Image 1 (spheres, helix red, strand yellow):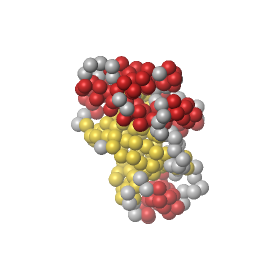
Image 2 (cartoon, rainbow, N blue to C red):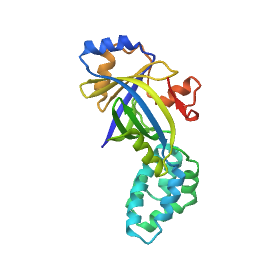
Image 3 (cartoon, rainbow, N blue to C red):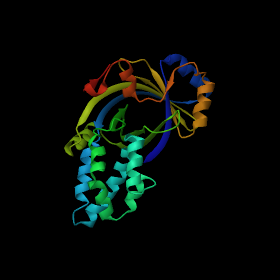
Image 4 (cartoon, one colour):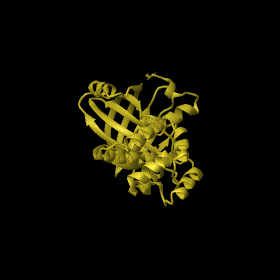
Length: 263
């Protein structure tokens, strides 16, 4: 099931102090979770572009329809990563108000767009999407497979995130399945999480190796996020819209180069 959420992180927290404040606020304590996490990269945008471009030319309605759906996902990522000036030039060239309109064109027009040297030039620059990945996570005895896409372009102070996830019965079997279809894991990670619910917000206290604990507040209602910040007196803390990888980068650690991140 997909969901669109807004989230922030509150850095360098005192875990016991924040837990005490959450209890006084009346947040529902969902308990402690010891987490094991496998992380997988999505195939490169350029590779997916080449695959879609060629398969739209085959004489098979099923393959064509399948790859139109793939193209819809690819365009969403492309728009978020390419700079606004290049995107505007591409829209003007094809008389589009937004790039998604290309999906409503004929197959011949879509193929012409994908074959265009300007289009290919932009896709050539796009390798692994740093803002989108697959995560297989075990929390105590529950395992969940998630695709997570952080939208880079937004005017809000909150991080916009699209997540699609479902529960799997076995962590290692799910990992073997992913690797059997060519999605090899990039890394293995461990962390400790304390979870709370307040109104419609999910509040997590995360403890990772090598960095200071932080709290994440996730909700589709910005007003509730702001209410939690005010009631927990968090305005004096550093509040950011960064993912965990970016937090490690701030202290000079590239988690992409680490096959294991353990306590």
